[in-house]
Length: 310
Image 1 (tube, helix red, strand yellow):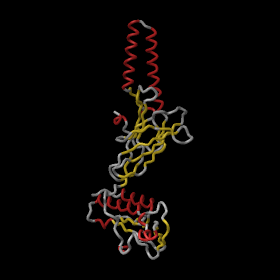
Image 2: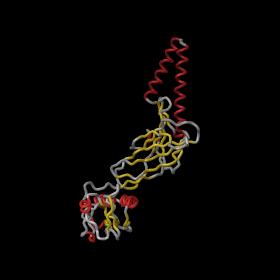
Image 3: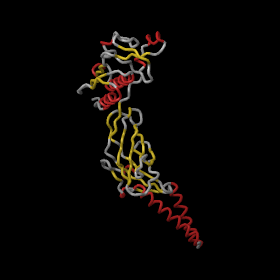
């Protein structure tokens, strides 16, 4: 039913909840409560028991007030912002949702759920503004690429759990899925100019210094450390090692998606070993050479946005 009633056009942020599109249905507890009140009313009328009839009417009024309160919990709520951090294919994508409301009514027990995604309860934001709520929901990340966010369902059973009030929105946002790196892939290719250098030997222009926490193990001069009986780290003073050239065309023997996974694997290895690398994809200018987290994110984004195989 929610899918049929919730066919909405994609809405730019911020998008507000339309009071006319809030639907209220009884829960299982609510149906039991309504049946109980009905039986009490019939019994009170049959036996002329005015106190029992008064109690039944009071309970019925409480049920109606609960339905109205649940409707008001959603009315006036605005989806102010959505932030989706990039995720890897096969891992859930975490989406941060920010809700706001201008009126002084407290919102409690708001549930946020994407279609085919996990649900989460909106909690008060960690700011001084008491009119903000935030929730973190996960989305399945099956395939790499840029995907539109699915419709979003806001619901609540507050205050008494007798009814379920819900509405649907379709924010105009996208989330990015990085390709999954190849599992147990081969090591990094060796640049031709670096074939004569061993990683455990210091170059002629390199300086040796004491090991500090956070230094890469690839820079440890093992032989020099053995003579010194303490860890020494190579600190290049010259041009450093030749940057790696990761080229799409060099992997012609692999399938299309396998090339993407292999390049993602090599880039992770290069970033972990603090190597500089460049990425050359078909029809695009080369990225790099560079290193570090930002360069890795830029290269992974380029791989994620590669067109599907034709």
